Length: 352
Image (cartoon, rainbow, N blue to C red; front, top):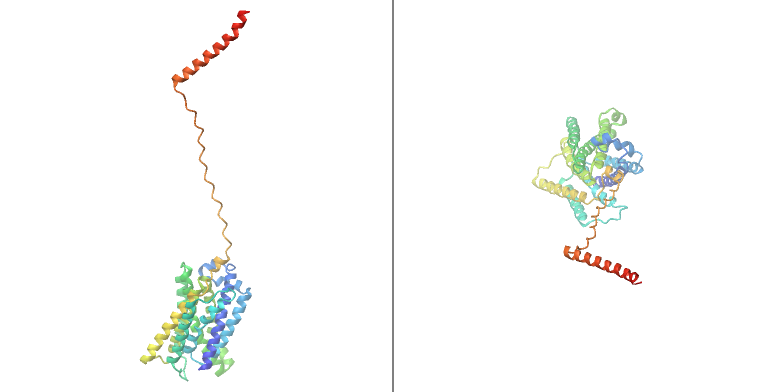
């Protein structure tokens, strides 16, 4: 049991590293894909651009490592135990996302992390040891595959025209369904490989369905990251994955469902703690912008507003006009003065 828990937590760490690296790579290559395809399935058109990003390739290597470690954990343990522990990747994703930013962990992040840890501990205690012998029911597995594909198609149709804040969690839910289905298929594939050999694995249909489901989960996760807020995408995937995994463990592998009152109460409390902690952790993840917005060229600066035309200056005030009587008197006085002046000039000549 302890080795299963350790391997599950290691897989969670590797996947948290992968998620952070792939998100940063998606932000870089956000506008290199097919714009027409991106309107329908944001992120799908980015795959060709992402393969040229070193960060994405490094994230894919971490993803592959998590896949192999998870396969070992699933072979040794139960789907209903391993997959809920994968939620712990949020405990690793938050500090990893702060690397390089210099930001400090807010206080509410510690409370959310404590809620997730407590919920996982309660789950392991009340869940008990899984049965030693379980057998997959192929008919139930085929039904699970059909339901998962139907959910993915429905989410794609419903997300058309929705705002990014809604599209990201919707695609995250669809990705969570495929991650849960992958866990069941991985466990079954490893069982066939170990028990019956490589030839039996190549001739079985499990491995080919697993390849298709892995591609679908990768595409949906990239779509969720590129559709909107990182917190919404991670929340949708990390809540859906353990819930659906537990149901698939009961329905496909025949794991006995809890029936005792104390188990039901304990599982309900564990689910409440984990869901509340996941939502809290997702909300304190550093904000990452939509690729289209982060890679778009800066908007041109608005031209300066034209200056308001100045009001025309008022013409100088005309001098105040004198009353008509005074004006006539002044004119008469001036004429008399001019006449006397002329008279004075003539008088000396007459005397001579």
